[in-house]
Picture 1 (cartoon, rainbow, N blue to C red):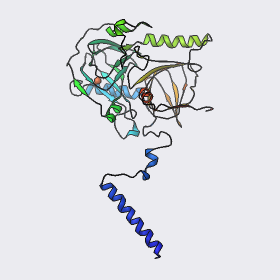
Picture 2 (cartoon, rainbow, N blue to C red):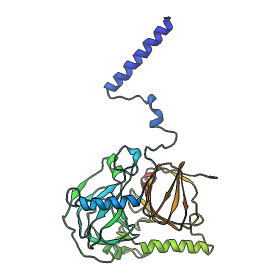
Picture 3 (cartoon, helix red, strand yellow):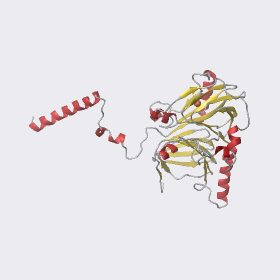
Picture 4 (tube, helix red, strand yellow):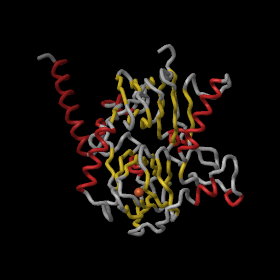
Length: 360
Ligand SMILES: [Fe+2]
């Protein structure tokens, strides 16, 4: 063995020892993992993935037969667990999405937590969610808010079960260690069943702000955004487009964002929610966004192009779009889509970035 070879062997041995000593002291050298820590572009561990409503609903119904709802478990909610995230119940790195199922005459007890929550109703009615003592009817197409630290419980007044989509910022709160939780009343604090909530009676008049509500609030005071308003707004956008006026985000693509009337921004500090309507045969421009999103098909059939994957999706199906995944949607019928994302976090922290992929 030459002197140079001996020196090289000695170095290899010393390097091995160095790494062992690093590990013993809970140290980790950057040079072995730069690509993971600082990728050239966001490379999410979360996967683009589709959950089928045709599978979700029957499973939730079986849980309805077998699992009681009540204090302790609190909710019969079944979370979408992104297969890229190692088994945690997170749809994306920041967002929780679950199907919640409430049987006939059942009550989900009141509680509150620092995590922000919403409900979106794909089908059914007959449940009231009581938010800080205000009963809010849940009906098809409605988008309902439970901002952080608002007490909330649900009760089903009918002989039929009801299921809906829950969306929360649970993963984000978990990583940030910001979670607080408090139990409330075992029964809802107001079991009245009004058509609209007190919050809507005060706030849901287009362009009219009550003078008792001039302060800016972090979350929207509107408890429920009703389907009739969303539907009309989208119908009018497409009608205006037909008449030659600018109204749509791209040809055949109408869209609205649910907003907080006190500041014009997103409904809650961590969650953006929108509704999109595509005419049959529309293809959206391929786009990448920093941050993640979850879509639910409200009506119709579409092809979701997610990177190099193509998924055909139908009513009720849920689709995750991880950060920086190229997305284009092709409607194969008139298409209605609900979507929520973590965009307010990204914008507030100046991490927002998007790219429209030209010529795709
Ligand atoms: Fe809750």
